[in-house]
Image (tube, rainbow, N blue to C red; front, top):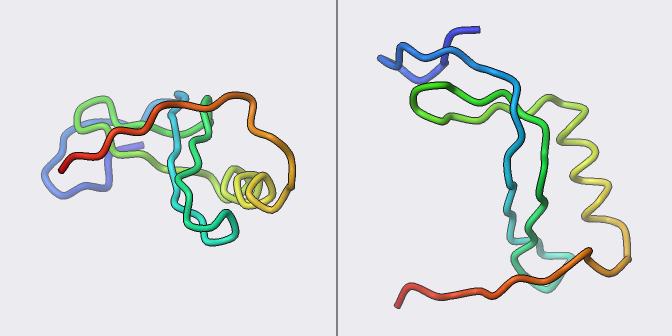
Length: 77
């Protein structure tokens, strides 16, 4: 499928991305979800998530379990 960004000649290809979100249920903490299936533009890197993937992410954010790991967070100040 052709990229939806105006002027981009790229095509979407199946891939995996790292998805980050600041989530209110987690006191505004940044949540990082790795290996998320997505369609990624081969030129500009635009990412499209399928509705099932978005629902799965929302489900993960509702669960109350410990993350698989933690990562350092650096602030650009």
